[in-house]
Structure formats: structure tokens, C-alpha cells
Length: 617
Ligand code: ADP
Ligand code: MG
Image (cartoon, rainbow, N blue to C red):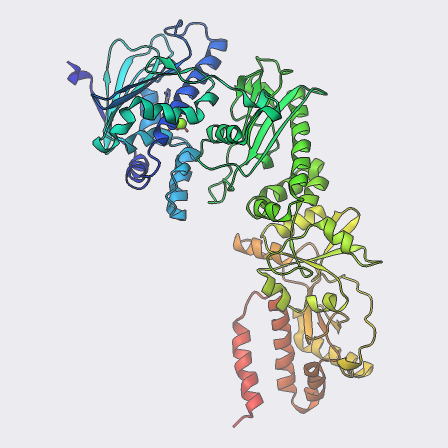
């Protein structure tokens, strides 16, 4: 009878790829399929509830918002049914046959790139439904949409190439998912097995869950409880449920307040940065509740964008229950909640930062978010600045320090915080800029992140102390006391002549050649004379194919350095070699400054210098 109405469909290519991974690679932790399907059932009930706020005529209106799970050992099946929003024919195709949401694409990409076969990635990226095929070769989804005129349908698939949709009269509203278990997975048809899985987290499902007719959960709004009444295990289970993960959280913050707004908040920082695979920005993960009733699961504007890595719940009884997603962002109350929680959270982090080692583990994974906040969000800039951490010339490799710690260590009379951006600690320490600071006992922070240039430019100061890169042209350092071991400098007059001569040879490549007061061991260094156009910005523009203005460079020479003295001497005797060496000094300095764009001349020149050095035959 059903033949005429049976529609055959094939899966979208990405779905097939996904299924292949789910079935063949993620074989540990098979039981997560229960969690995924129950979480979908819960979502469907939640969607129905929201629908009912505005729509009175839904199909099957008397059904209770419940989730029913039944196991059948003889037939080796498990059935998960909800009286939620259900699906129409189009929705079946779109939701179960294609990957519409970006999350699943991100999941595929992440798996491909990381080579990780973590099963908890499934939930994290929201590809939960397909996890049913970890335990089954035949999944049926019986459904009727909430819409009165919806069809009674059955979707069937073996999880391999495609699926069928046929009419199946007599469906109740919602979805009933019947899973025929593979032989090796028949344990999931046993009641005690499912019960123990459900016990782990179902108390946080906000609807009654019944297993073979018996209620298994009492609904718990953990966030409304007193801290003292909640155990670590409960917190962890709650986090795993809300974040849909099997990993424990890294940090948690639980607090309540009555004034100025009544608020209960329970938020978590995950173990890992959810954007670590470069798959773009994740959606906000803190849900908004009013007296245990979910208002929005991923509200935009409840917290600043840069806190999108947080998971958890915020409940405020002062919120009007009928607040819509659209008006949320304009609500003065939501804005207040936002401020209050953000401040509390930053305070909380400050507290956690007291344990430097633990904080460093968090920081190395999540610094991008804090930096983003410091750049974008003026209101929290100062607080966020205190939470930033960097390597430093005063610390060993790998150790981090903060701006406040730097200020506390500053020398008398120092009113500037020095930093340098480079590819690595080694690169920064090998460049000539650092030596003057070392000699004067001044601390320099080392920054390695691509956005640090932008960050420091935006901050520009910390507690009234300017942030200055040590390769800037206008750095002022006090004179060092005369050092008898440093050797005699070139006579003032000879040195001035040498600078003029070199400037003439180098022409437009440099704006100025002058005496360097910051040089100790190196013969020369190049200084970028255009403070707006940092080497990092230049590099970024070039990588985006944008035209960059020619660099404006000041070349500083060290009058005590042997090489400089010898050029002065060679100037008349072997002018060709002296000129080549001057050019080479400039290029070397440009490399250290990250400003050399074209190195073709350099190689040829070095050959010529070697030739002259060895004597022409
Ligand atoms: P996610 O839950 O992250 O969206 P899933 O793979 O778990 O991803 O589910 C895909 C989609 O299928 C859901 O977004 C939803 O639209 C639909 N869906 C799954 N289960 C149900 C259900 N029980 N009732 C209604 N729709 C469902
Ligand atoms: Mg899901």
C-alpha cells in the first residue's frame, strides 16, 4: 500500500561523509546516542512551548510535554518519543537529510584537521541525530508536525546512502524514533543499561523523562540552589548536559544576587577553546531563564560577544516571561544583566589568576577572547588588561607575567612599559633591539600572537603607563655610564662623516643614518620611522594583497663596533666593498626589524662581498 507514497531520497554528500565517520570512527562511547536523542526530544518540546505562546491551534493539544523511552529486549529495539514540535515532510528532508547548519560542516572540518576521533566532538558540533547509526542499521522516525494540517509520516534509513519517507497514519504530535539495534549493541535494549545512562544527566532535562512508563528524573534547576547544597559531581553532570560534552569543565562560577536585579547564574569555562580548529565563531552558550523557564537557549546580547566561549545558565526572575528574542537586545534589563555578569565574571577570573599555573593553562587556550574583549570593549578594557599575560625578558621561557606584575617591578623613574612582538622568544632575543634594555636592566614583554600588535595599539597604555614597542624610533633611553670594556668609539667627526657617506650610498632606502645610543653588541639597527605602519600591520596588509607604502627607515650605527670602524677606514681604500658592506648592514637590520620585503639583491651582494673579501683573482 505504501509503495505509491514512498519517496526515496539520497543523503547530501556531506551527510554521507559524516555518517561514515560516526559509524566507523567513533566507536567508543556508543552510549552517547541516548543523550543526543533525548536532548533533541527536549529541544523539540522546548520549541513547542515557545510556539504555544503565540499559536493556539496546535495539533494534539492535550499531550503532556514528556519524553518516553521504551526498550524491547526481544525485538532489540529502543524507542525515544516526544510530544514536541515534530517535523513536516520538508523539515524531515532538511533536518535529517542535509547539513543545513554550519555546526556540522565545522565538525567535519575539525575532524579532518585534528585527526582526532573524539566522540564528544559530536555533541559539541550538533550532529547528534546521526549518532543513532552508531548502534543501528535501521532507524525510523515517526512524526507529526505541530501544524494542524501536517502529514503523518515515517522516515526510514539504514544510515548508508539514503532514506525513505512514507505516510504512516495515526501518528501523535512530535517524534517517535525507533532504533533497531545491531547485534553487538543489544545491550541498549536492556532497561537497566538505559536507566544508568539516563541517571547520569537526565535530571537536567527540563521535562519529565519516562523509561518503560516510569519516571526516571526529577527536574533540577541547579542554578537556583545554594552553592553549599551542590556537589562537584552534580555541577559536573550539569555542565556535561548543558554543554553536551563528556569533558569536565575547566572553571565554574555560581552566584546569586538580589539587588540591583534578582539573578542566579551558573556559568562554566570549557576545558578547550571551542574555536581552536579555526572554524569560526561559535554561538553564545549561556542560556537565559526566568524562574526555571527557558527564554532563549542562545541569546545574543545577554553577554558580550567575547564571552561566547562560556556555557551555562542565567536566571532572572525580574525578566518578563514574554520577552521575545527580538526585543531582548533592546531590553534595558538584559543590558543590566550583561554588565552585572560580565563584571562578576572578570572578578572571578581575577581570583582564579592567583593560581598562576592553573591560570596559565586557561590563558594559553582562551587568550584570544580576552584580547578581543580588550580591543573591542572599552568598558572592560582596564579589567581585561589586568588579565593579560605575556612572556618576559625577566622570566624564563614559557613563564607568563601580567602588566600589573611588570609595573610592580618597574625601576624608579621608569614610566613606560616595554614590549616587543616577534615570531618567537629566540627571534626577539636575537634581534639588536633588546640589548640596550638588557644593559639598563629594563624588563621587556615578549608578544608572539598575530593580533598583539593590534592589541597593544588599542590599549596604548596601562594605568597611565604607555605601552611602547622597543623597535620604535622614538624610544628614549637614559645614557649608560661609560663602559671601559666597550672599546673606543670612532671619533665624533669621523663618525658624522661616515654617516653622511653611508646615507649618500643608500639613497632613498633610508631616511636618516645616525648614531645609535641603544646599540651595544650589534653594529646597527633599523628603526621604523612610521609609528602607524608597524611591521606586523605591513605584513598583514601584504598577506591580504594590499599595497603597502614604502618603509620609512632610520638606520642607527654603533660607533664602538669594529665593523663600523672598519667601514670608516675602508671608505677611501676600497670604496666598492665599503658600499656593499653598508648596504648589507642595512638589509641585515631590515631583516631583524621584519621590514625586508625583497631579498634578491641580498644574495648576489653577499657573493660579491665574499669575492672582494677573498681578493679578486
Ligand atoms: P542539532 O540538535 O544540533 O540541531 P541534530 O543532528 O541532533 O542536530 O538534529 C538535527 C535536526 O533534526 C534538529 O535541529 C531538529 O531540527 C531535527 N530534529 C531532531 N530530532 C528531533 C525531534 N525529536 N523533534 C523534532 N525535530 C527533531
Ligand atoms: Mg541534537
